[in-house]
Image (cartoon, rainbow over the protein chains, first blue to last red):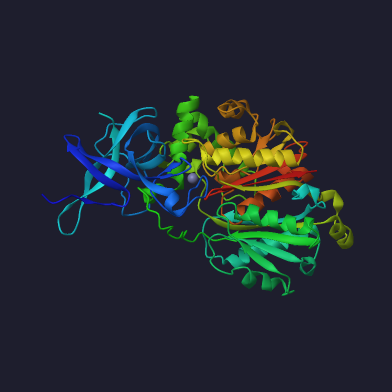
Length: 139
Length: 379
Ligand SMILES: [Zn+2]
């Protein structure tokens, strides 16, 4: 079986597959000062300014707690049709990220546990399935 | 040793002017800007050649838009510079005009903001992101609205009252883009944008211009400017975002540290403020920022709002101009227009929206990035 194509492979990688979909590891980074960030970069640490070898890849689990959600009713960009829901998630590993709620997720409220998964989103021109990160209520 | 603005020589706002903020139109920016500058010169009762330096705030006009506008006032050869600092462009231009005069390099300087609503273009940093294309400003603030509502048990109606108040203030301001009072039902019944935000709880897209002229005591004397209408800038602080604890709202945290420094610089406490003009591009921001500035403890903003404490004539009038929600937010002009509003209020010249006995005003802007600017003006 061919590996799945990922929409943003620089930001996440595929974990194991189960009945809820494909688990995901987020490609974060860690500075030698202890600061954990997402996504990985080597320009320099926002907390202490160290750069280069001081910053190393650090995989983050896509488990976290919902801080906020917003259903977007109006969006000018034709490549992203409203409605869709944006979630703000405090990852258990530290960073706070903002991304999309899975279309099939029940409504979410702040404080709930949520999990990121890779879900099929678009078909590329060659017909292969492209996976992207979406959050939903933790099972 | 480094010094703050109020340890340098005193600097005063002596002239204010606008081109009304309005819906996007065919009017060229040159006409918008010239209208504001000529009205500020007339207000100060001085001639253009007395202005020794100009700071032109624009975020959306592209490169070098200032000189094609200023030349029509008569090309005096005076220096000019452009200031781009997102929503805080105008506030930043004002700060640097004040610094130039306070330092003694000039006696009279102009800060003018002008913008047309062109597309925002930001360069790629080379760092990827998950879904930032889906998170426009109103969704950023819809997320903050959801957090605030849950944390402080505030209802959608409570938060929307900010818009009712600011539309009421804007209805009395001839320079406001939106000059119509709105009921709570109208605010909530409007077009839904993102989360609980409706169109009337969001700043409109628009254009316009605002100008202020600042001067030293030497300049005021030499040019025969009416010192009785001059309003002193007693604090100026600019800051940028640091790393805050995970989940902390950076807009509010940055506002708190910037406002604290400005109040300390002017040797004031939040209770001394009569007027605040702040960055209410979205309703929830007003609650966040009055709490960050220290008007009330966190989560108590709704109570003050409902008691009328934030109305014109209340304990501290917040956004008597109508704020970004009603007066509008053409970007470059906005921070300068706030200064103009405070000056008008402290002079007692604000007509039907005059806050009685106003002696101290604070102007606050945040800009994406994030940056924050706070100025305090005193009679
Ligand atoms: Zn570091």
